[in-house]
Length: 139
Image (tube, rainbow, N blue to C red; front, side, top):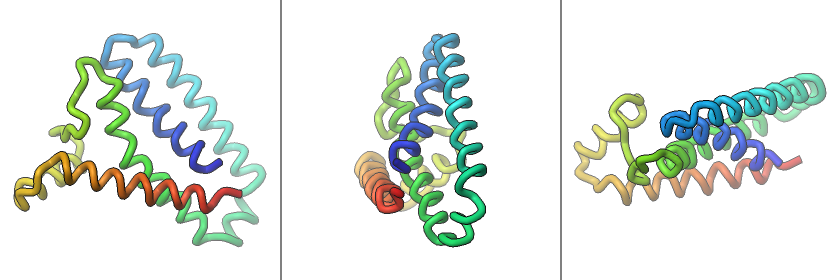
């Protein structure tokens, strides 16, 4: 369940961004509106039913959920955007405006590691690691 929620949260952010950049602003706006409703329902349900007892009894498990989500986000976020955007960007495109892209680009230039194999391995490891942590935490 946690893996499904994480994937929906990640895809719900990047698909509308790509659609907006493609000129499909109304569709992107509608998806964002639905996305906000779903996120709000999840957050309110979490605070109403699970927060006090669950957080205090399983603090380490809570951090595994958060870290697993961010690992999955790092693996799928840019890939989803690059695949959905028209004109399509290279699958492992590193931009020039986001701070993580700038840091990774500087590291790759300094180390002379080829971009695509490194980013493929990086995203594959994060995808497996994040997915496993989210699957293990399944209630």
